[in-house]
Amino acid sequence: MTTKTRYWTPADGEAGVNEAAAVLAAGGVVAFPTETVYGLGADARSEQAAERIFAAKGRPSDNPLIVHLADAADVDALAAEVSPRERSLMAAFWPGPLTLVLPVRPGAVSARVTAGLDTVAVRVPAHETARQLIAAAGCPVAAPSANRSGRPSPTLAQHVLDDLEGRIDGVLDGGATGVGVESTVVRVLGDDIHILRPGGVTAEQLQAAAGGAARIVTSGAGEAAPETEPAAGTPSPAAAYTAERAPRSPGVKYVHYAPAGVMAIASGAPEAVRAAVQAAVDAARRRGELAGVLCCDEHAELYSADAVIALGPRAAPEAAARGLYAALRDCDARGLRFIAAEAFTEEGLGAALMNRMRKAAGGRVLPVGER
Ligand code: TXA
Ligand code: MG
Image (spheres, rainbow, N blue to C red):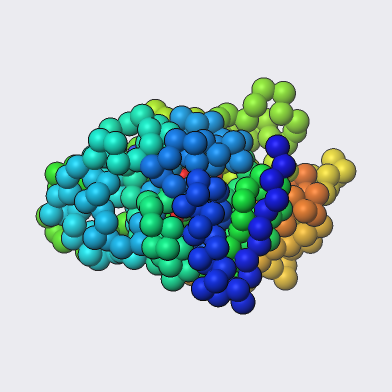
């Protein structure tokens, strides 16, 4: 399957957006920028269009997609019912990186998009180009991240082209995305706001917006669980590390964001983390492997490795979240066989950052000495 992939630069402006919208309206698949990551969009009402998303990504089709709207007022066309608490979250965070799982209005979107569930995940992106595109297309737009399945999500149009050129109808370039990790997916049940996937809106922000009566429930968040133990027969050093075990959740079966090399994460006191990361890199290099480090800015100068990628200041996970996926792609481009990563804070956006880092590492942790 080879398709000519059109490419619209930011300089194409409104004309580019309108051409991309016409492709979507005609049942095509087009990648577009959002404030989180690039999405691969298609008309959410069309079975064939949705099918093309799965085919292009090489993604199993039993994983439901997020439906993107240009305007919060359009949510009632998709959802059978929206509670006052859900409406207040929309008012607080839309447009923005919050996805709500709502009871679907029968027939509103293709069953390919909901994976046959009786709910639909909906968000209004906080990216001007995305909203212009969706409004001009005149349909709800289903869009997972615009990467090949198993690759890091794209935060640049070039990442999309690297993965999907020849497999999709077009890419609308809007420059680098802002947040860098995907939206927060929530399900509201009574006073409980369940975070199904941590993302661009933090638990702290949700709590502040929802008020004291609401409870933010993060335990058992499906995507927080590492999907698999390191596979049997995985070469050293993977086998040497214990996989963190977390509760599995049904429907979350796929490994995401894994770099080609083996990645492991060190957490704890900064000095002990630094020693553990350097020791693991030294061991990998003695095995003859190209070994790299993902670390905070403060430690970048102190490592000796084949590649040292500084993600941002230790105390500010926003920068690291913005750059993580590009860094993982960079690890692959450099042919790293082993990647030792420093953990960042779990607070604020750090929860989503660490969720994605643990997934990239397949749950592998580095032993860190006590201090
Ligand atoms: O930031 C984002 O959310 C990006 C950009 C492109 O908007 N999109 C994105 O879509 O990450 P995707 O398809 O890669 O992730 C969809 C997530 C998955 O965790 C999926 O399981 C969950 O949303 N999801 C979708 N529909 C659901 C539903 N009906 N019930 C529960 N979870 C659902
Ligand atoms: Mg994705």
